[in-house]
Length: 210
Image (cartoon, rainbow, N blue to C red; front, side, top):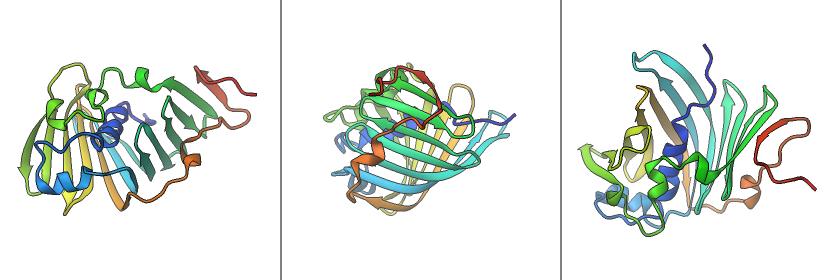
């Protein structure tokens, strides 16, 4: 069976997005240096998903952009052309092959994720139990059980985030590996403005077109 974007991504994305706004309490120096003062981030990514039996479910690549507060864009190039765009209010998912757009309020998509508890003043250690499990590796476990994410492992190369591994309650493992990362470079607002392509089927609460 072929799989499209897996359900794990919202918590992973918003961890990365909103943790940058949180305090650096409880973090080792390399992680604190990465998160502190972070406003924008972009990188190439490779994403792999395996099931509880370590059977491959998905292998994809693309490019991502993140801008605080509340905006991101992930362009999947392989194996399918897909986009995930958060414009600060809504989250848009576009599948070019299916010519289909799904749109949902950001709060609805992420209601049950621990990352949504993160605000501009909430330190990571108030939401997650943080454990340093190796050289430049952190394990984050949610302090509440209202998420399908059981833990997140963040690996750093020096003071740069190299990968995120997420385990969920369905037994799946989603791994993001990042390369060519650029921190705090100016990003165009147009990156986070999504307009459904002509002819695409739009599912959800999209704003009316004029």
